Length: 470
Image (tube, rainbow, N blue to C red; front, side):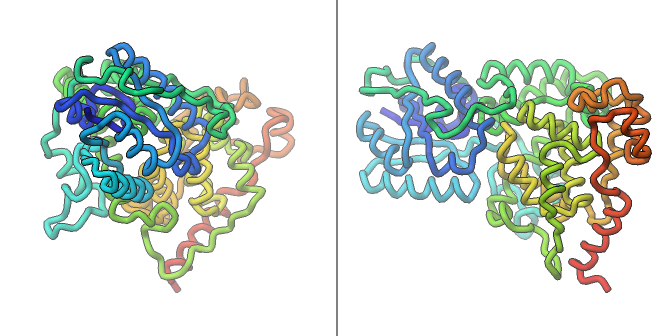
């Protein structure tokens, strides 16, 4: 008997650890609700997790088995379940954050204490930390060089779903356990409408994207209304899709591409998969970046951290339409388009002069796809404190960004109904309108809370002081 401990691999197909265990089967699948992990969760992520687990359980039952569900400290629960089912070995897929590695070390020791062998398997990434390095053997801190090696490395093929006869009969467990409600876990139902979770809807999203959007990705991905993004971020975060299956689908799209432009577009999407792995490598070798700047400045950055401005940003009432649209999409859908994520992050750190950690924490609470390494990397990029960081002197103009990527204000008015019917040229020049014009045009929409030009100069000065420039 084998025990497979699911964590962020909530699927049966293309699951390397599960396939590895099934080779010696039969396998008892297990998921443990860990209060130590739930402490850092937000309601949308917990909702997505529960839905994905429900779909995974249905799949196991269709295969003649079941998912064992428990709650507690994994270092107590995993050995107990292993002994209860007579497991000859416990298998799990590796995770790479500092918290996950501490947990896994504790579980290994607990299993050693009851004399149950264990095996952790590389699954979550194509190329695990330490496998892509400089010629001197050091991890990369610049993405471009990492990408060149990542792109040229051979990728494994997807692993098949284990057949039903390699999975354990649910009768080997006295009680497989019921899935808790979100309230049982200490959370309220999120206000957001979270996208459907599970391997089947994830695969549908992948197929739909690779039939169309991937061929327009290079030209259209920055435009939030053009639907040229995959919406797979939560699926990759929770592992409802395997990375090998996703990459294989993009390679099939590459074969189907018509012309250099479409091939370039597919490769651009593949480069985004590489960004995900790059940030995971960075986090593995620098676990402190979750709370600390990756890039060191000579002096501390003098963040302004005005609580009223921070509250206006969180609530989507800054008076900068594209920023407010993004923040309201986040609240409504537990998701935000990637270009808009960059805009709102730049606005928080460079216009409001707020520490990136406030934005990171807000995203962590509200995103269904929050992934520590990706969000941390993105926030530190915007704040000019991370790897490959946006230069401190390159500051997004939120009005120009809105006009460029949402010229008809279609995205803005979808989430900011106060501006519905307002001419797009007025929407994109809201900061230039007089108070009277604003009141006459959209009386329920706020005036800009800051002057972008003034704050840009303040941001430049703040970073120059941090750099120690005279």
